[in-house]
Image (tube, rainbow, N blue to C red; front, side, top):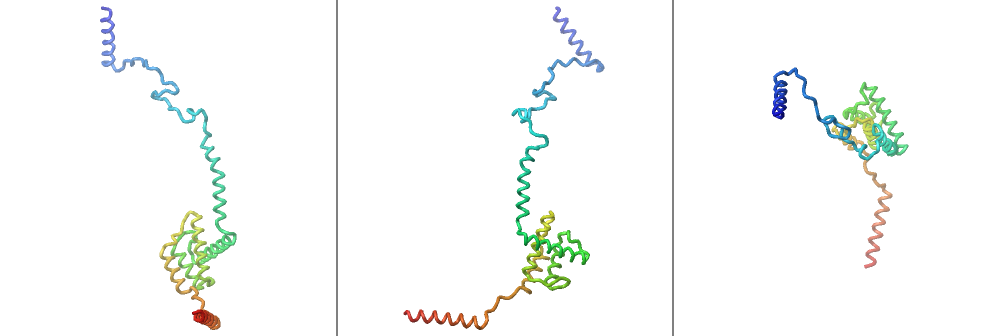
Length: 202
């Protein structure tokens, strides 16, 4: 009988809660989440806590390891050209920069059309000293290297550059060196002597 009374009281209490939302909720009898458990607010264990060692803040350990490698990479990159090449590239860039400023152009924008005009001016001696095709090739390499180092690569395969350089090579490249009359006579005489020697051996 007493058991039935307890059950009746419990049901009455539950029905009362459902009927009266203002009634306090029953106490939470669940065990609180503890450190290392997977309760509602638990933090899963990290690799540091599993291994028992704490990693340096901000991945400082990785940075300390990579810093010498970065310095070595920068040193190798700085040494990719000889000192003479670096001086020539610096002079070529200064010449290009001054020419652009005289024309009211921005030298720091990697515009292939501007580079093509600069190469044509140097090939014809129009506002710039006339130079050889080999010097123009070096100046183009200097501009390409400078723009790439600045993080703004020059589209060297653009037609404003490739077509202009092809025309310059065709128009201004040195023709093959012709042998002089004395050299030709010497070569012919040498060939005749070889032919005569071979005939005598037969």
